[in-house]
Length: 153
Image (cartoon, rainbow, N blue to C red; front, side, top):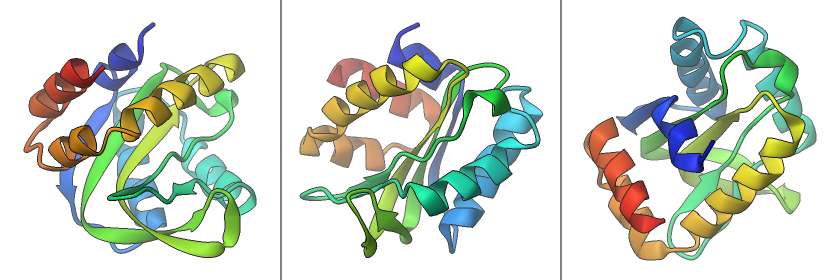
């Protein structure tokens, strides 16, 4: 499965209003859960993993986060994405003592351990393109977002 397929199978929320990373996690979890993509335990798994292994990434223009949890919480693999109205604070992936104001979240819901690394690498390549990231943040809906990702790959 290609990255774009995981995204199409997932949820994309543009201009999401949330006051914390936990609220972002809850909203995305609820949408994935209703679609039958994740188990109820997925949310708790995300929160616990985020405490141990922060996922905020400091970039040149727009900071992002790539939260995920263990495959046992996933039924159908997908990626849930949220562009945020206002940044939400995450801890930095490479320095948990450092806070990062995140504007976009790529939440991985993958049911095979090896696919996490592969998808992470592909997302890292995508987010290194500042123009693409800016265009993704301007997307108004899922269709527009998917189209921009497909063109950016």
